[in-house]
Amino acid sequence: MATQAEFAALLDRFTTAAEAGDGEGLAACFTPDGIYHDYIYGDHQGRAEIAHMLADLFHRDATDYRWRFFDPVCNGDLGYAWSLSAFTSTVPEFKGKEVLIDGMSRFRLKDGLIADYAESVNGGIPMVQLGVAPARMEKVLRKWSGWLHERPEVKDFLARRIGA
Image (cartoon, rainbow, N blue to C red; front, side):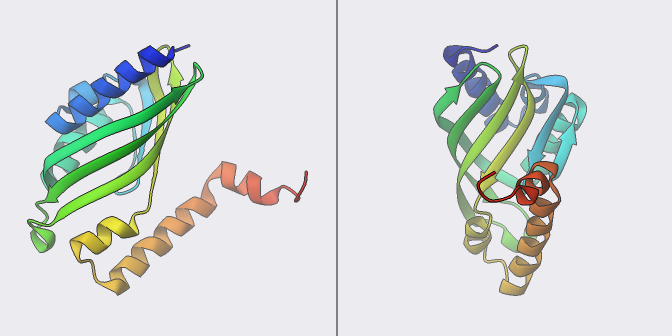
């Protein structure tokens, strides 16, 4: 069970590693079988995959990366925090475009580490900042909508009667 102070310190380690492109440092914030649900790069399970996602995917596609969490709240095994992140795209078709993202994150904690990380952002805002074509944005948003509807907890929620 993590305390509020321990959770805040974990978030500082998380963002320091993320900003530095330190995949091993970010992965060390997770349990050995931890899962990082990224809204762009998908799910990554285990420290090796999480390290790869940060170092070899995200930092391949972005530079000048900044990320900070604010207002963290923790009840021992579950934490939430609001975040701001910013980067400059290095993807050839969007090279040099600056992006600012506002999001909320959920952290399921185990033994003081992250067992499951998920983020919720309005992904349309970064796509507008990048200049993604409307037809491509629609395709991506439809894919994300499908992912949302396929999650077990969403299916359970939708199956629940109103007022039950």
